[in-house]
Length: 138
Image (tube, rainbow, N blue to C red; front, top):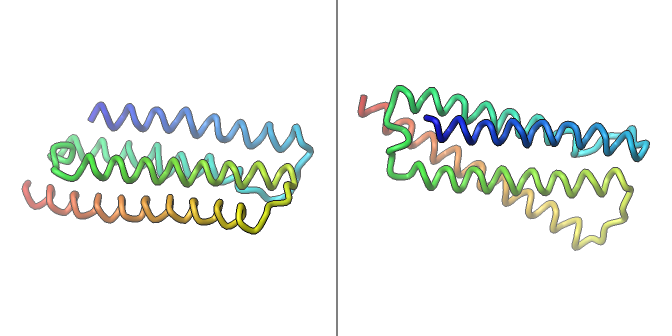
């Protein structure tokens, strides 16, 4: 349980940094439009902080952390969330700076973000399978 709370705390810090960066970077550049930077804070809070706080509660009542595939979930999910957020950061910075992107670079950002979302999706499905299994054991 403590491991999950530590992961959640790391996401708290990242979410706060992401929110401050969005606010200050757009203000500093005089940007008032819509940007992907606005979503970083929310993604990290919900998919990072809240997810792992809820999992800590599950871990308290079940053998979640001892489950065979839990470490695989942790890797897939955290890599997926990290990749997604990094691509949101890159996309958002290029939007604020009004950078003209080549078709290839634009597609690369979208593709990498898509891979991040796929990893998140696989991680969530894996987590649900683990939760179903550990709930049967109780």
